[in-house]
Each structure stands twice: as C-alpha cells, then as structure tokens.
Image (cartoon, rainbow, N blue to C red; front, side, top):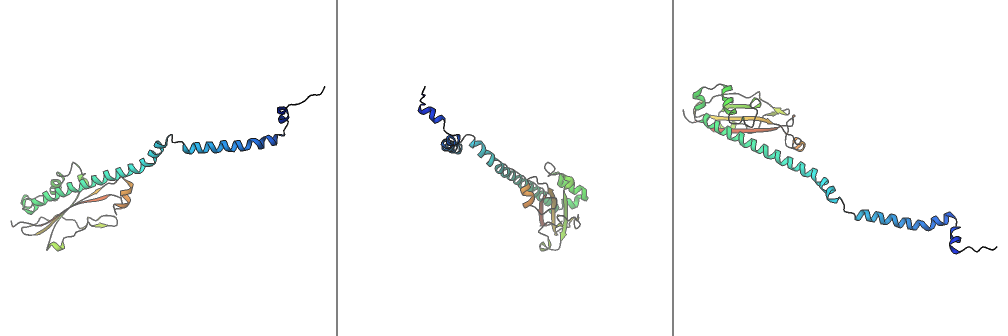
Length: 200
C-alpha cells in the first residue's frame, strides 16, 4: 500500500539543526523583550533611590547636629568666662582671696551642666599691655600646652586675661578629619576675656 505523508509529517522529518535555526530568532526576540521590560520596570525604584540618598543625608544631618552642639558649647563657655571675668575686673575674686581650685570650681558651676569640669583648663594672667595678650590657643604637637598656665590674681588697673579651654570630643568622622588639628581629634572650645581691672 502506498502511504502519502502530509505536509506536517514532512516538516517533522527536518533535521534538528534546521529546527534550531528557525527558533533562534524567536529566542533572541524574546530575550530582547525581557531586557527591555526589565529596564522599563520601576518596581522598587523609590526604595533603591531612598537607600542611595539616605546615607549622605544622614551624614549631613549628623554634621549639622554636631556643629550646632559645638556652637552652643562655645556660647556657654563665653558666657561663663564673661561672667567670672566681671568679678575679676571688679576685684571680687582678689578680695575673696580664692585659691586656684576654688576659682576653677566657681567657673565650673557656670558650665558643669554641659562640660566635665575635670577636663576644664583655666588660665588667669596679668600683662603689661593688651598687645601682649595671646590671641590663639597654645596648641603644641597636637595637644593643649598648659605649661604656661597660671593663676595670678590681679591688682587694680591691671591688664588681665582670663581663658578657659575644653577639649570637646567629636564623633562624626568628617568633622574629626576637617575641623580640628588635635591629635585626639577633639575640638578645642575656648572662652576668652581680656580687660583692665577697675581701681581697687
């Protein structure tokens, strides 16, 4: 009996490499469509963008907070030095005959809510003129040089300088590298007052 194969049967007899060649373009097209679909997909884009922006934003906020804290610490120190300086200028400290430790404790009462008084350094000196009063902090080898500090109670009509120093710790790495020359990466908070004492 003679059997006649239809068209479909004939196509099934094609070599496998021919069938692969026919399906290859379709596979490439499908792959391109998947890639294009992936690139157009915006699912989760907001979350990814938030992660990218969150870290620098957090660093910026920490820098602003620490900078504001330092600024506030300087204001507190300046206020305390100005207040105690008035008592030195009017002769109250000299007449009270306070010792060095008592004088430091008096200054500490003005700042102890913010500063550790054990780390506070105080320098009270008299000078021959205002031009002789140092205008910069005595930093040497990355640390506060206290060798020249003294406690000299002035007499009347004497040029006097009162300075207070405190090494404020920094926690944000950006500020530790850029805002200080101290070897321990602290920030030097300084309160300073220079005046002529009243005649007493």
